[in-house]
Image: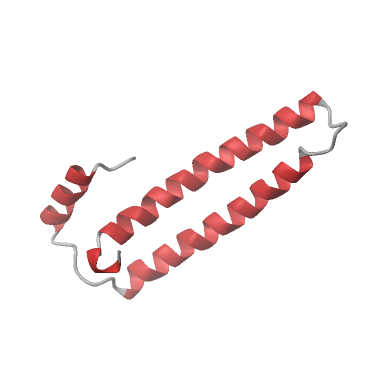
Length: 92
């Protein structure tokens, strides 16, 4: 789910969130970034696997699909990290 600023602000107002980041939120954000790092490292491997000059078209397509899927997964985790960060405006 992609949050608009207005939707997020309304949600924060309704829940009373918006103060300092607590340890649980900070840990969750750190875990999200660690997961994104691992996923991006896997995507880098797929990108390298698609570089050989004689790679078969099927192999190129497989690596491209792998990278695309990873990109979607990373984008979802990044959205979650943004929601956590925006819940605590003093941090950014």
